[in-house]
Each structure stands twice: as structure tokens, then as C-alpha cells.
Image (tube, rainbow, N blue to C red; front, side, top):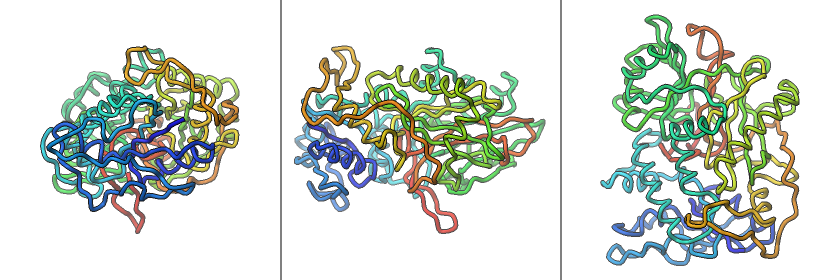
Length: 481
């Protein structure tokens, strides 16, 4: 079996997948750097070389990571397939996040204009980056490989309004959403029309809690909890969740985010254990919910990189009860069934206060970074390799790019049960990025940073785009988005 990864070679996501393949006795996957995908092809200029890895230069824990032999072609003679995997290769498309140059190239490709590097932690150009990702995914698909996550699925999961609408149409429980809004004035008007005074405002194309606000109104009072730092005419991610109660600042943030697209959902009253609100990241692999992490917080944002903690899966299962837990896992499987051509999906699931109901906050295309969380002895990457060697193949129409009509039949299959769920309560190592969810109950005038407040909690560097290349440090800590 020939495997390839389109990703950022130095990123631990790529390393963990490569190591899982090697442990399973498979050849070392070839890594096709996002920089080369974006810097080559029609109309491209050669990428910078000073910080680009040379073929065969990166070393993973389980062995040397192999890079595509051909570097980016000269601008005068572009080759549309030189930097992407070709036919006969099973291709994992990994997150383009956590690389400042890739972020710049995505925005440049998406806008069709030269782009400058963002400042560290700056939230900028999400719509252009999303358009650039679409262009890049089209290039990857044109290479003719068998894609393990489909470009259209990645784009749908990375487009919050579109994904929300798709799940709702499939009968999957999601929080109600406002009609499209584009700035603070339209947000307030839509909230008034709906009779809502508590909402979660999310960038349409975002990750790592980038630009997410838990917003509440009570008469003339307004308050917003967010990790956004307002600095002059720019906005940045920050490791500290802060509270704004002056309308001018909230208006400035929303108006700065608005041109790149917004998605607004009604505040969801999330369940609590003790004095902490919680939600789940459930990684579904080959249609089976397998790995689960609980994220808890006393603040509106439960993102682990913001200083929050993991909860005890067993305790949550016990609180929910067997029937409610089984129904929640069934919902996660139904979410994955909406994307049958994609091997894995990270589902963010919220239990309502009282544990009787639940809803899906988001679906994450790159939501499988859960280090040291095991199910049947396998981490998320090992489980995906096991599913491949056991015969999983994307369920696609025969005329769709990346379709395959046969299961994998090559030697080297790794026997592994694909049922069962991981239970983990220890703090996750490393710095992960997150995405928003909704929670909280109580009156609109209640504090936004206590129990019952809105929550945002996902694991893994970004479900979609590198909206920003990092987070500003607080108290000496540094976290990459």
C-alpha cells in the first residue's frame, strides 16, 4: 500500500500519522508539503527555500519522513501535478495550519493578490485563506490519488454556515442559527428579530477559537467573552479569555470579523459536572465513534490551550446514563455518515443541562489530534491505518475524483477491533487548537465567565484554516493556533 500525506512536514500531525504507518509495517508515507502545493502549479512563483525542508531531510520518531522527490517547478514551466500525489496512492490531506508561510500563500492564492505575512497571532484574511484552500484541494484531487478525506467534505466542515445547514437538513440536532449577518448592526438586528439575548458568534471559516465571542445582551448592557485581543485596527488571538462590556470594543471586533463571514448560533445550555461546563470531542473513524475527550472549563471557552482541563469520560457517561450516551454516540456516527467518502471526522457534541438532549456544535475536518488517547490500544492515527488495511475505501460516486471501487487488498493488514471508546482523564500533553461550541444557561445578565457560561472546546490544530499563525503568549506561555 502506497501512502502519501499532504501536510506541513514539521508538524506533529504528519509525524504521528507517519509513525502509525511505520508501526503497522507499511512503507514510510511520502510527504507533499503544503508550501509546494501552493507555490507550484499554474501561475505560481517558486516558494521561499530558506526554511523549506529538503527531500528526505525531516526525521520522524519511527523513521525518516520521505518528501516528494520533485521540488516546485520553475514559474516559467509550471506542472500542475509535480507537487501532489499521483494515481495508485492513498492520500491523507492534513491541516495546513501552524505555518506562517502556508497561511500567507493560502491568502495569496485565494485573493489573487500578493499577501504579506500576518503578525504573530493576527486574525486576518479568513475568506481569502478558505478560497486558497479550495484551490489547493482542487490541485491535490487532480493528482489522481485515492483521497482519504474528500476536498468537498473538508470545505464543508470548514464552512460553519454550510456545515450547519447540511447537518440540520439531515435531521442531526444542532443549535438554531440566525440568518446571515455581516457586522455588529446586523447581528443586533437579527438577535432582536429572533428574540434572542445570548448567542455564540463564530467566524464562518475559523479554528482555534479564533474570533469566537460568547455575546449576551440585557437591556442596554452588553458583554462578550472571547480570546480576541483588540489592538488598534487589528485583532489577535490571545491565551487569556477576556471580557468586554463596552459596546464600542465589541462592535469593533465583530465589524473586523464580518467581511470574512460570520455564523451565529443560539446559546446552548450545556451540562455541567461539579462547577465546570463540558462538551465532547468524538473522533469517528470508518463510521465508528472511537476516541472521546471531555473538555471542561469555568470560563466561556473550554479550549485546552487556554488553561482548561480534560474531564473524566467515565464520569460523563455515568452522569448521562447509558441511553443518553448511546444516543449521543449514534448522532456522531450519523454525522460521519453525511461524509461517507472521508475516513475520519472530529465531532463536537454538547449535552444539554439535565443530560436528556444533545446537539452537535461543529464537525472538524482535522479533528483527530488526540495524543495518548487510545481505543483498543490504538491512537487515532493507528486506528485509521487499521481501518485502511482492513479494507476501508471512500464511498464515492464512480465519476467523483478520488473514487475507488475496490477495497484495499494489499498485505500488511493490522487486525484491530474498530469498536469501543477510549476513556481518558489525564491532561492532554502539547498545545492543541480548538473550535467553538455553545453552552451555558441562566439569564442574559448572568456572568459570562462562571458556571453555565458558553464554552468552546476542540482539540487539534485547527479544524480547517490557519486563520492566524499563532497565539500571543500570556505569562510566558506560547500556543500555536
